[in-house]
Length: 271
Image 1 (cartoon, one colour):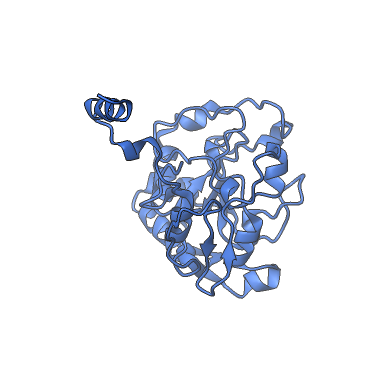
Image 2 (tube, rainbow, N blue to C red):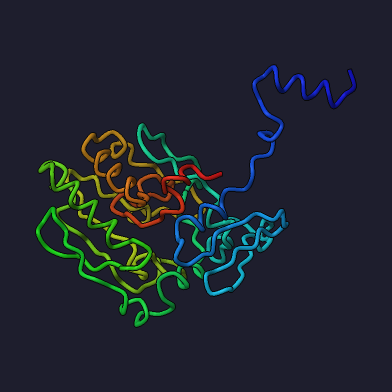
């Protein structure tokens, strides 16, 4: 038996197809599936840069060849590849995030501005008042790309259980055009696609409140991963395309943001 045939035979014995050795890049596909009104359907032509095309015919390079940059540099100038670089671990049980494990925290600001608006006024034109069933009031959220309807569905689901509704009865901010504290990056709140809550039982934690630094270890508040009701709240958000800042090493347990490219039906645990 020649060498190629021997390799193929071994793979078959292991129950592994040859194609499984090098799975196709799913990041571009997940981006186009998550925002089908912005992106044209993705067709991988085998190009090295995995070019994406918008509905308007504009082209974007998935990779801008920034792999040589440090993590901090990528935070400030993330391309689409960096935007999708860390798989978000939806569901529970959830393990403690490792150093710099911040799935979804690295964001392409160019993409977010294209999706939601390039400045405060442009974003505000697309904000709507979303009924928030847990408290009978409304919150401002972006209406495009399914964000506002998704948030409303989360609220309706949580309101069915009074114990869960109590966790999200006090929104602590949605739209707010601002930089992330200590940086020049726009917050997801700038785009009307994030919401915070004043969580009960001292479950609200933010890494900067502890005096932690960007490139230094920060003790994680492990109790938040054990709270059974908070787990159910997080799961309800993830079901509708939101990620939770409590799964970041740079934790923000009050924070939920709409990121269907990371937790959408076809794109969970993108690699």
